[in-house]
Image 1 (cartoon, rainbow, N blue to C red):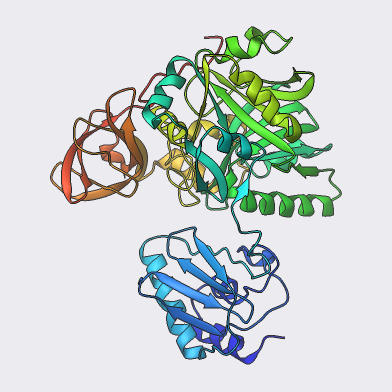
Image 2 (tube, helix red, strand yellow; image 1 turned 45 degrees about the vertical axis):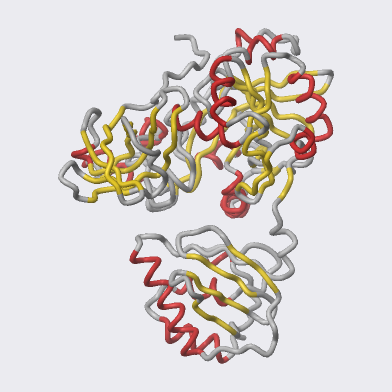
Length: 499
C-alpha cells in the first residue's frame, strides 16, 4: 500500500508523467530501476527528503535507504546512505520535482531516470574487463568509461597511437561491450521484432549493423547481429546501454515465451568472455599467422569460430576505426595470453579509448548517447540504410509509422559532418549557426583529426543546411569559427570487401 506522502505527491504532480514521479519515489530496489513502469518493483517506500542543490538542474531524491543525485541531461548518479531523521514535506517534494521536470522538458530531453539503492551501491562501482591487469602492467591511463575501468591511452600520445593504427595495427580492449547469444526456433523473429534488420536475408556466417528502435522511431542502441544459423545469433551491443538492452530483450523474451515461442538468451559475463579489436592495415597479416583458416575468404562483416593458441575464439571482420580489422571474442581465462601473443608482433601496439574515438570520428561512425539517441531516428541520423527494404515493406518494426513517414515526407534535421579550417576543435554541444549568425543546431561529437591535421565534428542541422559544401559557423568558447558541411567519412574507409 502506498503511504500518505507518496499518495499526496503523486496526486499533486499531475499532469507530469507518472512514470517520472514513480521512478523518483521508488529508489529502494536491489538493482537498476528503469521506466517504463513495468520495470518498477511492487514494493514502495516514501521519499523522505528531496532538495535542489546549488546547480539549478541537479536534484537529490532520497529514501530511508539511499540518496540519489540526478543531473538533468546527464547519466551520472551518486548513491549514499541517508540519515533517518531527515524529512521533506510533500509540498517541497512536489516543487522540486516540478522544477527538474520543467528543466528537462525545456531542454527537449526526455526524463529517463536510473535509480540505485544503497544495496546496489557496491555494484555501481566501475567494473573491470578481463584485461584490466594487462592495461595496468602496460602503464595504461585508466579512466571510468560508461562504468568500466579502461585505458584512455598508454605511454604514447593519442595522436601517435591513432596514426599507428592507420599505418600498422593496434589492439583495443572492447570487453566492456555486451555480448549475447540468442538461440531457439524463434530467435530470428525475436531479434527482428526489436530492430530494423532483415535477418531472414542475412547469410549464415554474416553480420549486420542494426538498431533497436522505440515506438516513436527513436534509436535505443546500435548493435551488430551475427547469424550463425537460422536458430542461433551472436549480438554485440554498447556497454553504456547494457542495462537498457538487457531489460529490453528480457521483456520481449517474456512476451514471446507467453505466446509459446522458443527464444533463449545468454548474456556473457565480461570477466568470462573477453572481446578485443585488432585494427589497421597490418591486422590481417598479423592474425593470419595465428590461425589455420584462410582470412582472405573472410570478408567485411563476416564471422567464424576457429582457434588461436588452441583456444576456441570467434573472429568477426569488423571494427570501429574505418580500417580493416577484426573483433575477437575470447574466453576470459585466455584473453590476456592471446592478446600478448598478438602483441609479440612488432607491428602491433595497444591502443586506448582516445585513439578509438578519434578514429571512429574520422570514419564518420556514430557514438550512442551523443550522435544518436532515443530522440533521433535512423532517417535523421543519416542511417536510413539500416532500415531493411523488406522491413519497410512489411512496416512491422518498432517506430515504423514515424520512420516510414519521414522516408516519404522528409525530416527537419539531419546529421552532417563539419570541417573547420582553423581554430580549436568544436566539442559536443557547441552551437552551430548559419553564416548570418542564427543558431540552428549543435555539435554531437568533435575533435582534432590527426590524419587531416584540422578539427572535424558531427552534428545536426536543418535540412536546408545539410548539403555538402554549405558554409556555417561554430561557436567555441564564445568565439565564432568558420566550418563547412562535409561528406562523411572524413577519411576513406579501408574495409576488406569484394569491391
